[in-house]
Structure formats: C-alpha cells, structure tokens
Image (cartoon, rainbow, N blue to C red; front, side, top):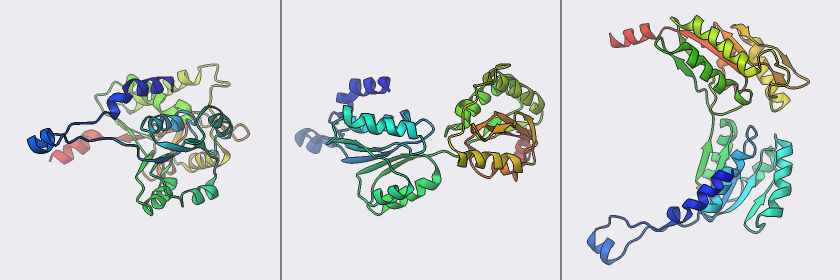
Length: 292
C-alpha cells in the first residue's frame, strides 16, 4: 500500500494535468481547447474478504488521488479487518470526505438505493449482478472486479515440471481463495502422468514437506467450507493428493483430483478453494480435426 500511495503522489500532477487535443488550428490553437479532468464525485468502494486490506484500500487511494469523496465498505466476512478499518479510518482520515461503514446483505440493499457517482466492487458474480442492477437505476458507472473458472492449459510441448510448479503456486496460494487462481487444469494426455507427478511434488513442497502442520490456510467461513467439501464428496474423480479436511478449524488440505470429466461436480462453478481438478485432454487430435 505504501508503494501505491507513493506512486500516486509521484504521478498526481501528470495524471491530473490538462490535455491539449488535436482539434485543429481554429479550435485547438486559436480557441485553446483543453481536456480537463475533474473528480467524479462520491465513490462507493466495496472490498473483498480474501485480501481484505489491499483490495479495499487500493481503489480508495486512487479515488482520493482523483479528488473524490469516498465511502468504503470492508467485507463483513473478514470481521477483524472490518472492525480495524472502522476504528482507524475516522481517526486518521478526514471524516467529512472519507468514511467507512459496515454492512451485511440487508444493509447493503438499503445503501444501494442511494445514488453514488461511482461504484467499485471486488467479489463474486452473484453479488455483482445485484450491484449492477441497483447502479443501473441511477446510471451510475461501475467497476466490477470478478473471478471466474479460469483454467490452465498444459500442452504436449510444455515443460511438465515448470508448469506444475507454477500452477501449484497459483492454485494453492491463500488456499485458492484468489480471483485469479487456476480453477482447473487441462493437460495433454502425452504428458499427463508426468505433470500429475510433478504437481504432487510441488504441492508437497509448498505445503511444507514433512512439516505440514500449520501451513494450511483456513477457508473463510463454514458456508464456503461446506460448499467446497460438498463438491469434493460428490466428485467422481480420483483424489491423488490430499483430500483431508477439518470442519472445526475450517481447513482443507491442498487436493489434486484426476480423471475429472466436464460433468464433474468440481466444474459446476468457480471453486475458489484448494482443490485442483486435472482433466486429461488430447489437444493434438483436436487441432488435427480443426485443421481438416
């Protein structure tokens, strides 16, 4: 956050400077036409629970730099962070221009009835639809930073070890609770077995090797824990690594599942958790078929 703030301070005058458009001799030179940037107004910034500080404050920094007033709403799922934000913001920021509020689903529905000049939301598509619908009533511009079922694709010419190393890191960081995480992996059948072998190796390394105790990040709440373990229990695939979980601590071991089909429960929705489905694919046949 400090780097972001310093970067905004360094570039503030350049970003806010008037621009001279190519408007021709009469309008550009004689009339001295300029494009001037002005604040949008009141920005409503809604943070996410998986990185509850940075995903809330980064857009706040940008909004302040743009000259906007801000209402920020930290995620109500990350309760400790929410309480800290609500305590610190009025102490260190101008309360007439920047405020922090707490809100659950019911409170949010009432807040969204008001007109804002900009809404910035980080989170899932279900809530995004509600926000976009509410914003549309006031023609409020929105930024919706969402996730999705982003797969990784490993072809026959890939370095199986390097691909496995990078995919394991991307998949299991923060227990997969990242919107840019790998959701599932398509692997060419010619290197499938080698890739799975190396994926198990690197997952074990990142998990801590023999000292696994304490290296597993918790799932954010019981609802998400039940959702993930439900997918896992209904899966027809083979659990070749991990699979254990503890509801008391809300921890799920990094889990690799092979022999997964497109109809499997693990592909019903974005996982957003530490489960990596691996799908054996034959890219060569597909490419040859397309070429013909």
